[in-house]
Length: 458
Image (cartoon, rainbow, N blue to C red):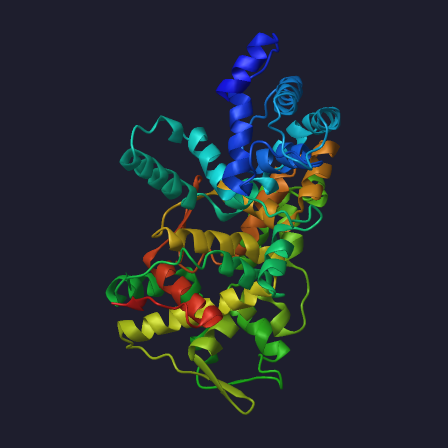
């Protein structure tokens, strides 16, 4: 470089010596290419592969790249340093001009960035500059800060910042995850994305969680159903209440109020055209009056019935269902009923992936962060990423349509379905798991993943 600097000064060639040095460093550090060997295609590879993947985020001025590299290869040829089988300076100059014009586009493609470059740039964003570290100890401390902050980012934000070159812009986040893990279950794919973040340690004790079970509106309704069933109620061949009995239970237990609350919550977040025409109250009344024939078609009743069966609170023998609930149950029994019933509810919701994605993300994110609050904005952002492709988002943005209210309502579908169970605390800011939610998510993961269920109730 000293010889090149003297050569350029003597010929009054305007070159960026620092830039040439960085380009040579890239070639040697990653490809072990000598500074005197420049075959055809080597400049294109340097500018469109090595620099975007390993170099600075902001590419240098294209004309400066061309003039500096042109001067350097002419210096090599003129002083006899150019290795055999290198291309001619004229060929290399043309290659440099073609490639330099595309550097900005290539550098903007994050899928070409190395992990080190991505983390280095992220560090700069949060105010941690690795280049300013005075020694190796300080450098390691800065790297640890960057890694800790990076690992705390939402999984979809990390994926956006460090995309895979194989990512298809026409695939949704869910489709990409299923392709990556080779499975066809989007919720299982989402859980796999959290597998390295799952916590260790003990779960909240039964004396803390059992009262949350007993006091939840869901459990009170479940117990009321069990009491209504009593010693015996006739069921169909599919193990649900007969239609007449189901309608009677629905009316006597006042489940229409849960149905109305569900529709009101949905309508307030994203009012459909009919609700805007006739008013929200009238629309809610219409939805609550929608007819159903089979007990399994009535969500308000079915969620209680399936939870009762899963927890053993109701047992079926032949064509008769009977309650096992008694007046005196200890904390362990209450917790068992609550956890098993709510896990069944989560399992049933998992069959409705459209409704489950926001809930599943919120549950996993709060669980992995020790029941921390998960902001609504983060949940909504995830739902958009998970259910829309990058191409979809571009098309939506180009159309001028604000998809935010729709995504917020979509995120709320699953969360609303478990809002009365006591596993979540909701606020205007976001949601967080309760101690009961901590136990329920651990049990749910144990069923879905088996070997990952490491935590135990202390």
